[in-house]
Image 1: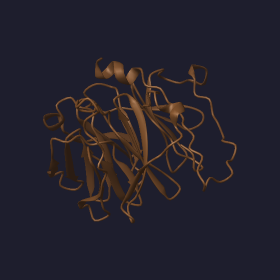
Image 2: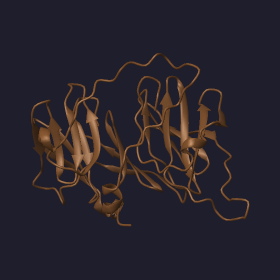
Image 3: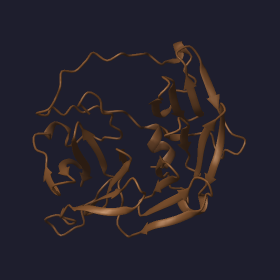
Image 4: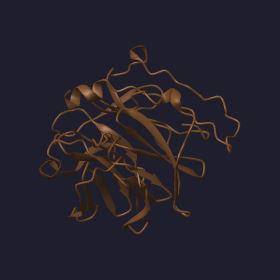
Amino acid sequence: MSKISYFKSKVLILIFFFTSFLVLSQEPVTIHLSEKEGLPNKELYDILEDSKGFIWLCADRGLFRYDGKAYKSYTSSEQKGLSTFNVQEDYLGNIWCNNISGQFFYTQNNQLKLFTDLKEQLKGELASFVVKPNYLWVFTAIKIYKINIKTKAITVINDSTKRYGNPFLANNSIFLSSDDFISEISADNTLKTLIKTNLALKNSKGRRIVQQKSQIFNIGDSMFLRQNRDNINTFFQFNTTKKSFQAVKGLKEVANLQIYESYTTNNKI
């Protein structure tokens, strides 16, 4: 399956975790975005509501902002392809996104500007990224790049044969998992190992367990890791202070679902 086909087939699956600290949920406020309301593209890859209340859409035809009435398209003359991914807001209120060609963009003065082009480093891989004060952090399957926001100098922080999962930003720290560790990029932008997970890398038949990109998320003060291991979704809860790591039981209903994205709200995911 091609990378483009993979993202075109993307769906959103909501999974609800009911925990002991679950609070009473509120009725969500919903809006309908469709062609009837002027939706400019059917193929959407990511969505974000920013701190000002605007809705940002990463789509096959570019980056769009919705103000509740109309859509505005954001493009750059330096774009190599229109498709955009991984929309997020930085600490200054700028909106960022990237593309499969290895380009990273940000909005400023109502324009989309190219920050950097990592085509030589990424070689066609759609990387995850997190913007922190002073640095852009870029994550591939086996490498991490630290890019100075002011100088654009690139530093390779880790070059490993182990596969990294998707980064998760919480309290100005980035959490990510590899084959057998939970790691943190702290507020001062240093990488350190937090927990050794001791998960088996081979199954009962001695074959290496096939893993998709793992995902870290939190519900309230609790942190969780989701891994797809040999096509089975497995969930773990961990505590960075106590260095504890344990499996979460009772989620058989979602064990065989193909999960692409998740969204956390009101102590639910």
